[in-house]
Amino acid sequence: MRAGAIWERVSRRLRAELGEDVFSSWFKSIEIEAAQGDAVRLSVPTRFLKSWIDHHYKDRIIARWSEEADRPVSIDVAVLTAASARAVVRPRPVEEAPRPAAAPAAGRAEAPQLSSVQNTLGGSPLDPRLTFDTFIQGRSNTLARAAALQVAQARPTDAVLFNPLYIHAGVGLGKTHLLHAVAGTAQAGGRRVLYLTAEKFTFGFVAALKNQTAIAFKEALRNIDLLIIDDLQFLQGKQTQAEFCHTLNALIDAGRQIVVAGDRPPSDLENLDERVRSRLAGGLTVEIGALDENLRFDILKQKLAQAKLAHPGFDVPPAVMTYVAKNVTQNGRDLDGAFNRLIATNRLTSQPVTVEMAERSIRDLVRVVEPKRVKIEDIQKIVAQHYNVSRSDILSSRRTATVVRPRQIAMYLAKTMTLRSLPEIGRRFGGRDHTTVLHAVRKIEGLVGQDPALCEEVEVLKRRLND
Image 1: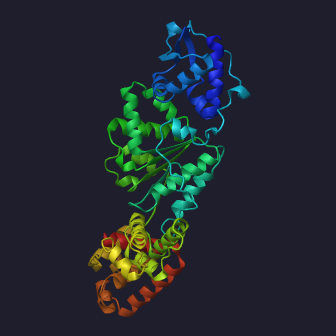
Image 2 (image 1 turned 30 degrees about the horizontal axis):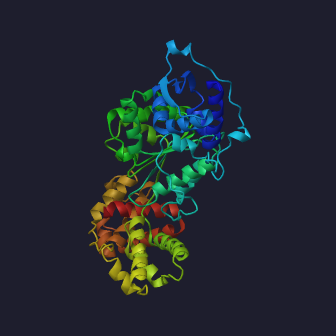
Image 3 (image 1 turned 90 degrees about the vertical axis):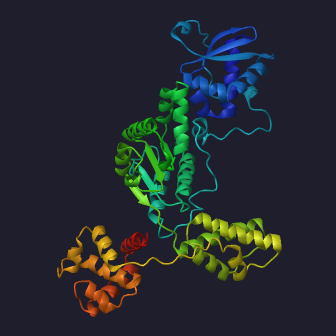
């Protein structure tokens, strides 16, 4: 059988086994340069393609060719040069649908195509458990989840609204969960998605430079619909950051979506190139705040429901759930650890899950921290900075709206975060009467319960004062 006919049959089998996306990405440009006896020489147009096929698919090609030729063969993959192009053996075009004889072996399911781009471009592993359905929503993450969901559900033809979308949060607050959810949902919608950690991006770029395949690496990155980068704070190296900036610009200019996550806002990533920080700040930046007690309780409820499926008969009384939610306050990973200890202690010792048992099991996760002593002067300073007024404005008798609201919030914080009396707070605020302070405190208390935006502002101020 001629080499061209054998390659045509091999191509059909590879298409059926790997899926159309993988085949189109890596095999369509392969040509037969020479075939003599049991030695076959294939050619590809770039060094990057040669390197990728050598490391990922060469053994599969050899196996399929040997099966079709009924004898062992050796295959070499070379980069097509202008001199060799004239001698290439060009097979007939491969039909789109595989013939029945070339179908995968019995019992082997065809590989899913939704994640083919993620796999072939060396994306970081995705966890199928991290979906929007398993992401517990609370006041601190509502905006981040809504923005991520809109990006994930967008169709390839939809206008890009938030680009780039930048999500920042501390450790264990759910930003990586959201990124995995975005990647999985977008893939299911038929979009070409690539999820990378900053470390993986750096490794891929450095390897491409070393193998002299940087151009192909760049082209591959810029031929996707959605690029997701996690842990941006770990992006290192001037050359790597410059390439990341070029990739951002190319994808944004082409109308492709970018989602990035880091542990701080772009402006606080001092080690990041100024051009990258500027580009990120030009999109939508969303923070995931600390988990409040209600959200921590809801997360524990979800974990209990999952645990009951794996351990029938296991249960955690509401009092224990409340104790854990109230005392394990750092992040979601500490909650995971606390809950896993309850399961382990119950399973291994047969002890019932009680508050006393929980106190013993998770005592090192309960951080007893002396509350920071907040000064009224610090409250006035930080509130003034936040609302872009001066401290002297807050202490003055001015009654314009731009000053009255910050002054009332500062009084409210002084009452709730210090042990000072109302008369003492009044004296610290320009010699005001204690009834003025009481009115301000009641006013802000009422607004906080009605206005989620103001409530979030107050929480941000409290976190700044406690840091």
